[in-house]
Length: 488
Image 1 (tube, rainbow, N blue to C red):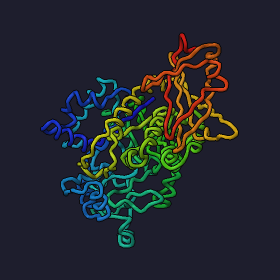
Image 2 (spheres, rainbow, N blue to C red):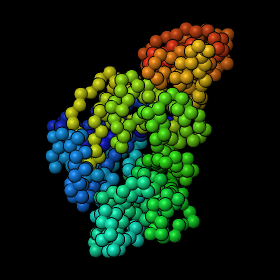
Image 3 (tube, rainbow, N blue to C red):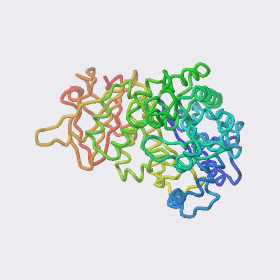
Image 4 (cartoon, rainbow, N blue to C red):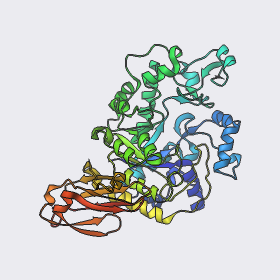
């Protein structure tokens, strides 16, 4: 199962430069730092924001008072030097020289590969910067406008190189001020996308596609109507992914996806799609909502990316206070599918940094939370290769608190793992019948994967009526029951 660790590359290298007292680029990150990044249980690193950022986009950002206010809210001692521009306003898909250039990225990839870790990078399929070469070299890749459009709606169009183009947008929000809209219906754009992704595949093991649902035929037609031209017979991603995989068969495709289009994007070729619905349920809803979500078929769930934060969401330590964060982390870490962790999440950072900034505020690390996450990610890695199963929880007529329990199991050739989480702010009790009939007639010992605690139980009881569980608010069990003597 894929476990992704996202790093804000520009901020990370800046802090490493301070830590080592010299400029640090991707090409000369010390080996001890790569050891820290390639921690046990992580098999994929996403270096977010390595491409050339747009000077034109930066100028637009510096004139946007709303953006500047958000920057100051995150970084009270903000200076103009801290504003680097958006990594999603791409000037060119070439690694920024300030980060070490293509040679630095190649060195970083080699360091990760030596530790058994893959590298993924960003691709933005919906828009480019106002100074991207395509505006002059391939204008038919973009959604065009007229001088009348610009005069009528300057917030939706811009002039560049003597031509008028539409600003990038999605169908539900106003246009983004700093980017130009690509035309997903353009045959030339589709070919150029293949060319770019093949180039990224030459430099990395996977690609995270920003707002991947926007180029889909139905979505794009809804957003742009007749301005985009005739709807192609084939959809965008099957055309693109199929051709890229002719050159890079093993390239991992990860979609940032919303609007319940995850299954459609999986069917169109993506390996994994963001599971924003699970995120919303864990942050805003209850155990019943989470349980309903994870009843989906396993093939679909294996193609999801479970997360509690990323650069677009509030920090988990702020959104999930206290023990709720740990309970949610146990759930995310032990569900089928890919898992995404965000640099700073383990340490309990609370400030969500706008991606435009190159520096973040100092925050004291929560060493207990960091230790918990590191042990959790390492401990669950072996069992996540097995067979996952959602389990029932039962209770008593006068106590329905079992409804707040989430339970599932993993079964491998060597081990069995049981996960039970009280996803509520009140104590919960119940029984969890275990799915392993081979336990009958045996004495069994369950062992806590993180703390080594042990529980001796009769196998008959574990199967029917089930393991008795009593958990305080937001508490959990993560238990191992090895095969062999005492394990069935």
